[in-house]
Amino acid sequence: MKRIGMLTSGGDCQALNAAMRGVVKTLFNSGEEIELYGFLEGYKGLIYGNYKMLESKDFSGVITKGGTILGSSRTPFKTITEPDENGLDKVEAMKHNYYKLNLDCMVILGGNGTHKTANLLKNEGLNIVTLPKTIDNDLYGTDMTFGFQSAVDIATNCIDCIHTTAASHGRVFIVEVMGHKVGWLTLNAGMASGADIILIPEIPYDINKIAEAIEKRKKRSSFTILAVAEGAISKEDAALSKKDYKKKLAESKYPSISYELADQIHELTGEDVRVTVPGHTQRGGSPCPYDRVFASRLGSEAGNLILKGEYGFMVGYKNREIVKVPLEDVAGKLKSIPADASIIKEAKLLGISFGD
Ligand code: F6P
Figure 1 (cartoon, protein in one colour):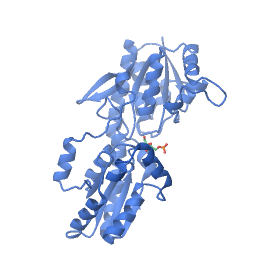
Figure 2: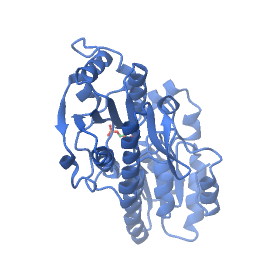
Figure 3: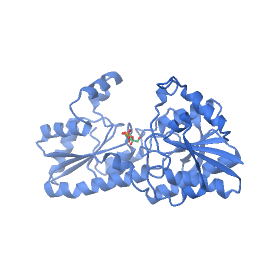
Figure 4: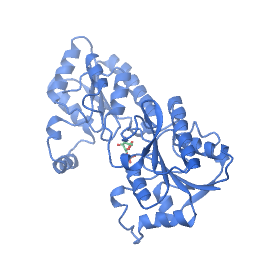
């Protein structure tokens, strides 16, 4: 008999349900007796003992379903060791609930913050297996996270739609793409949709170079498309201390970087600039077929590790293989686009400007 807890934490993404289904199917198909506890709304469920018993049939038909059937929430790692508003020690509470239910293992699906807490719980002696979810693809130790490809599809579709209206009106359009502090999503959606300028946090931009790229493009086309990561940053801002940059953002009159860029581009080029922000649509809806298969494979391997009693790992993807990565090698590290990534070189050869 194995008693397994499961939770999904942090921002949701597509294929969370497909990944859980992969774990659950593998466990139930093994013939081993399984008791499954689904903790609700992320770590909150484990802290406050909020769970529901799950059966194999709860995962019927969920491979196509976006969101998470367990619900999710953000429980910031930086305050996880601080007591809650009623003085409850959150880490002790999670351990208490784990031992009270006599769990053999917790399966935790999440991104960067989630993995820091998962590693902490591992160090506290709990058996943990994790799965890498996030549309940002910024999790260290895996070449890909599930949710990413689905989000690339949505962001690409958004830029495709903008393309036709930009062409009709001869405008400059900025599409602001999610991705937090990294540019994977913007780079991929931007390249897939033929964006002319791609701005990502890893390559700070010079606004004059962006204006030059627009002027150059004007010679052969009436419109320009910029795919801008929400974390894109100018060279001047990148030179600021973290504290000063935060202060600048807090005092800015612009809701996000794209609106500041739109004003600056208008000033420098006289162009009519429009901004589109697809926002959370990028995390929503049904997972794409790639993510359904990918998340199922990762989930299945997580189930396999549990059956073998191998704990303390994230199931990831390296060099086209499903692999297990020690949690301590993942927690607290960000996977940015490397400066020498060949995809950047190739994009530049295609004539895409990064504003650098
Ligand atoms: O990490 C996923 C993500 O969608 C980021 O791309 C984005 O910066 C952030 O979450 C938005 O967070 P929230 O849903 O809390 O607004």
